[in-house]
Image 1: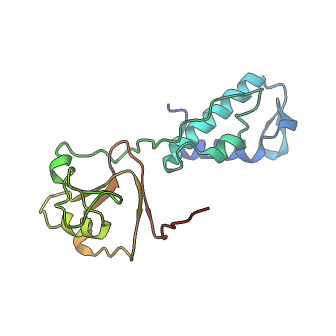
Image 2: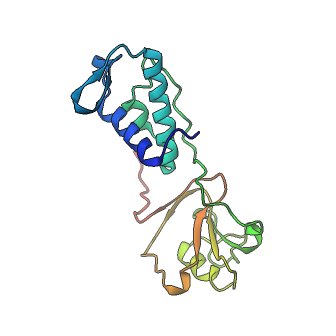
Length: 188
């Protein structure tokens, strides 16, 4: 959906998040401390739903954007909307080339092995090995595709000028995260 420019939408989201409260339901804040009275509750509700949808679009990495959902009080009886599923949202600009399965190096932080070739069926385990291998293939757009899950780095990721055109992204429709933390093996 398109309602306004990005800066206007950011102002709308900020205004709704920072100034809405149940005590002023039906009154919309205007500049200069004035309020617009007698705003139908249905309009107020639809604007909060619009702000939630736009906030998720603006920050897709936050998935369901639970904090915004509750800040806009979309769980209330007067304006209820089911919380969006916590699934990755497609981001513009991350479209993969048609031959991505043939040119990408694949990484699976759980089932991969760095002695593998890095294909979809035989993925690597280490992001560093994958980045280094991807730039040696001679592709115009070297690419590393991370399978879903958390990819823990055991040491700093070292990228140099040879990696300048490298694209590191999640496998389509999967959510991959890169963490510099240590995976803890705890029992309770």
